[in-house]
Image 1 (cartoon, helix red, strand yellow):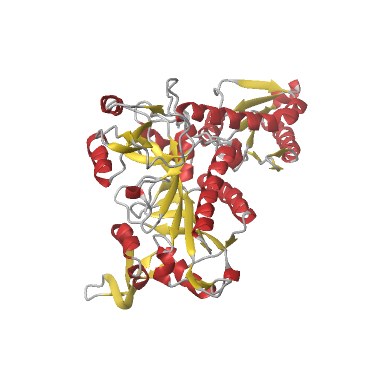
Image 2 (cartoon, rainbow, N blue to C red):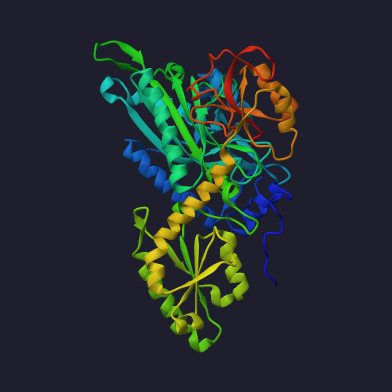
Length: 513
């Protein structure tokens, strides 16, 4: 059997390329259950690295991990009508507690439940019930809780890592004494996510606020981070919600102030999912497969023993393991460098061995054979560089340069992404129409009146959405002279690019996933 490479090119069919990379990199596989996926060890290793880093950041901010039930009584959702309406079409509901054989011997649901149970689409209602019992005084605030779990949303269109029926994710829930404190915390958590993506995943994002039409159901404000993929489409990578007192009133979460008054708490929720893995693939991958940034790579270095003769095996394997021990003593981003010796090389042809690791996207490959040992040199390849570009260096040179190479690879990936990331500013409807009728059109900045009617019109006519009202983006147009973008431009008197009416906000517009 010959070497299997990634057959589809990004420019030919980005969607097919994405699915093929996932398969060839052994990140995930299809499940017998529609819309669900099996996360394979390579994909799970990346997710676990993300979890570990984010969890440390959450703990540093004072959050503690908890776990809430997967099943939520239907009556809990009935307390918050707006929230329920937003998720109603995606809910999976348990109505029976057992199965039994019918007269034909087929198994059917039996034992109806007294109250149907919703399989968790998100945990605000369940958390609210618990918070109402845990909070009674200002001394109990702020309450900062996080959980790593799964949720179920019955999606009609699914794509591995991006949109699945069952989702692995993290969701934080907090309660605060004042609206100001809650809002600041929601923004802090979005900042935490954006820092993580920049420092570990080499992904630049646009941070901002969702329009009223795009808010999380029941939220006062939804803050988002949007990333631009290589095909020009935007991906919402994570969100943070200022919930105000909507959920605390529904769940009767009150506290006694220092003055003895009874008031409702102000809550937040915020979360990210395995969608970050999908973002990483689409942001950095190339026509040879996945590229994993060093900060989240389960293995940052792989050593490939090249054994051509049985009599050389012991010598080469000993050299590989000795090299691995030395590499593991190095530090990158405050941790020991993660190194793996390929033990299955003896069962594969060299081409399969080499290209298998290329497709998995491991940052650094080191080849060690008898020829290398005799010459006192190692063959070193870096995944962000062309596969044919390999450097010959001594063991001492490698050990000295390896942490620097990992950091340089991170920087290269981030700078590549940043070049695509900056939007241009458009000021006329004709330019907007012309731009988005092009294949692979990237996102833009424009003034838009953010009403549900206008946003629906943009979606129907151009297939674009208002991604957010950005906080910190300056367009790449050299002639843009509107000054620093305000944190919220909702009150701006500029004319809407779509209707010409006054009152447009400067927003990020693009096609999205």
